[in-house]
Image 1 (cartoon, rainbow, N blue to C red):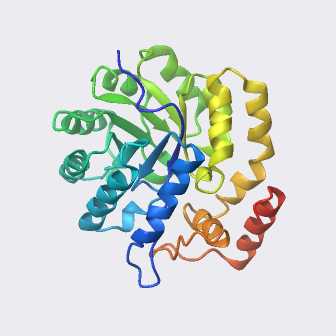
Image 2: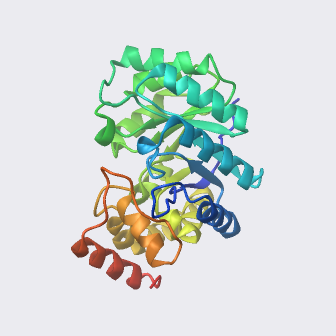
Image 3: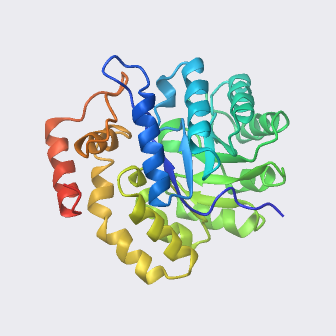
Length: 295
């Protein structure tokens, strides 16, 4: 039986850049250490929040390597390695494996998309060429393609596919997936505003944007759910909805990097085509952070 790569809260960590646009490894080290000190269960590097889409292959590999070394086995490291080019996804996966990552996160191929058969072939091809457990990543709002529950059931037969980060917001898909897939095909919430309802349907935790700034909250929320204390977890979910909403007032990771900068964490600038948060939305973010006692 497969064991879940992690349970609880995993931070989809930002990649800090300096004013010249280069990766700020000193700031990155501090962010990693602060997450671990807060008690986070895992760190996901080079995902959507980490701006992997605007990194060169060389940068991507270097950032994963740095994260793995800095973490130094203190928590699990999930390395983003997805691509809409299957061979590129294999290349990134093999480098992440060589770096010592604990698992891989693979988003569905975007832009060129794929049929369900194409998705199955894509993931099986990758799984045949690595030894690490793979987390599928379903985020159709960004990729234009979604898994079906039946596709999950087929992919769940592969022992290297550990489960899925589900960010579709589709609870019918989640329920059908949980009903037809084996118990050891795990699900994690990919949406901070849906942690509790997803965990009530059996998700094992969350891969979180909000935990970049409130790791203690997301850890507590997910662990309460793991302990079947859903009423207490629901209160946390609702208490922090305004902050979570503010973190997505513009496309991720624009607001969360702004929030980190407001906290003096040196997240730094974004890479085009992403740009600074608008003044109006920055005010929305500041108000939400103030209400939660962060400012």
